Amino acid sequence: MKLLDRLFNIDKKVEEKLSAAVDQRLKAALPAAVAERLQAASISLDNDYGWRLLNGTSTRELLIAPYEQQIIMAYWLYKTNPLAAFLIDVPAAFVAADAMPFTCDNEDVEKTLKAFWDRNRLELRWGNYIKECAVFGNLVLTAHVAEQTGRVKLGYLDPGLISTTLCDPEDVQTKIGVRIKATEHRGERTLKVILDSDTEEDLSPIAKELRDQMTDGQCFLIQINCMSSEMMGTSDLFNIGEHLDAYEQTMLDAGEKHSQFNAFYYDITVSGADAKQLEAERALYTPPRTGGAFIHNEKVTCEAVAPDLKALDAETATRFQRRHILGAKCVPNHWYADPDGSNRATADAMDRPTLMNFTRRQNEAKAVLKTIADFVISSAIDASYLNVPEEEAYQYEISTPPLTDKDVAKISTMLRDVSSALVTAEGQGWIDQEKAARMFAFCTAMLGFEYNPDECSDVPPEGKDYKNAKFAPGRPNATTVATDGPDEGEKGP
Image (cartoon, rainbow, N blue to C red):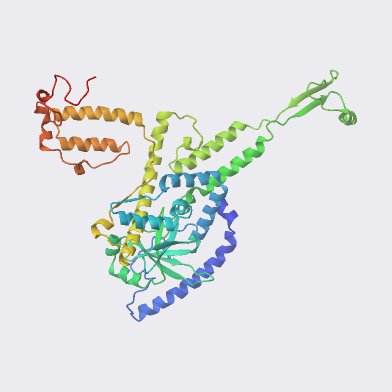
């Protein structure tokens, strides 16, 4: 891997790391061996008993680049490679909410969440958190709770300080803790991962005992590209890092070569001249100016020669590389200023995989926000700062940015046709009024307006069968309306 070789002097570090790893493993394995011989039944944070290791080593991680190298490479690409930055910034813009995304049924709960959102400046930081999670693959936000008010303050840990994560011994996909490396200010510590109430309740007894030992703090753990059996997430840029570097190098080479496209030189031939005569001709030669004349006899010829640098070949190569990179991330070519061969129909068809991928990322972000919101509400309730009925405390919705623009003209036409069809179907007795209302509500949701027809006020009895009545409800009987002139006190026209 040329990119990694340039960023890190791997060859010099491999031997040092291997020797250090062997010493560390021996030191770590010695107490376990002694405990096994003494048949000491104890629970520890490093208990991996009973697990079959996929890679045959003493860790669960596959034999890929160490996480420290992954995040440095991804960070370098994001800071120096425009295409890499595009692949991080664009999905984050569709995933991260610009304003507070919570809409609560209870006003006090919404005020609590709004105060938390503003206090931690998440209108600015949440988008950065989404980007950084895509770059580093893992993000740890520490949670600090005020005892008197239950207010939650979020902290940020450098992803480079993450050593590994700890899982439920009976459910590897559930991460229960994060091990943080030692720094000059603090030693190694283990943070408890804040889980939602259902996951917390379903933990195994061993996992609950392990979490009781995690007294160094608590945090929210956000991971992407993390398979169920993996301990650490992976950057979005890791599997395309080499291709991004090769593409950028090709673009730089093409830029350097572009300055030579207009370069040329004069090829002058002097027939029958020896080396001495050619030297004399070279000393007397002056290149003609634009519009000037070059006077010579039949023994001298002059021709302007331009280099053929094959510019189209470079364009083809860069487009080939770019499409390979974008396709690997489910991004169509026309999103990156390459509409070649695309029209409205093909663009709409190619957008679907991208939007589906963004929808999945939105759902992951909403799950994280739900865990954070539940923790903020629970902390406020435990501190008696928030006093609301339990059935109302956790009733809220989380909004995300729309993935597509609404075509109002098409949707309006569709609503008109659906309305007419529903009236006809109800009149023929094919569907009842409640089902027609639900179908119409489903169609209006496409326009961005959502409502629950079951929560609407009931239709009065006299209005349910007004079609068979002589007059519609709410309209006066025609026989009771005065027709012989204005009433007293009214002025005529």
